[in-house]
Image 1: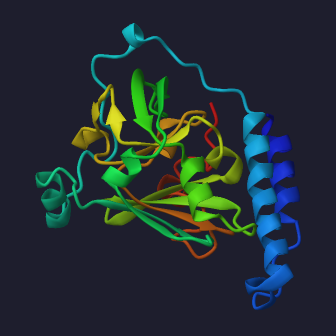
Image 2: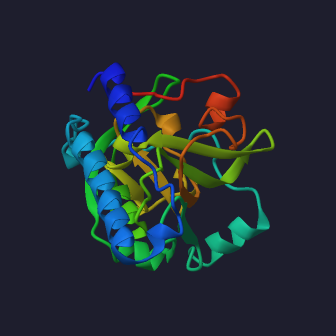
Length: 249
């Protein structure tokens, strides 16, 4: 889908009537109506996402021997080191923000969800590429469980790592969020994610460049805008002015 068409479709979704009467929406027929609107909103995004072509997928024998680490190669905190020592048994991923049913899931609970396995090529903005097998639940599964509200326009990914003393984060629009190849990955080439590649969780957003695939994931947050988030540009590198927010391949 051309970017101008994509933005127009999202603008149309954002212009849909919002739930102006919060109290009214809590109970009775009005509550049912708002539930219906919320379900339609998710279905519309899923339909738009399905119109995007899949990123190429590859055969197992085409996988690269090593997947280079880039950006942060670890999280330099005692808390992260303790999580790593325990095999990340107590690590949790939250789904929060503009959702009706906030989630806090352990890795075991995440692994119990339906899983997608895909062998795709990671393309770094610095010019290198690597092919790898990634495994994890589709992001859309988590968003459906959390029941994203219709006023949400973006999904923000919160991370445990920092760069230059600033928290790392990234974001995508709802179309990429519902794309079938957008997954919360916990395995790389059939093994738990290595530390340098974002253990225990990272995003895979296969139709965008590598800096849009945040590592050391702690939370998934549905938001209406980026106005109150760090520099307001929707991502760490975008805030510092190095890269564009949309990095489609």
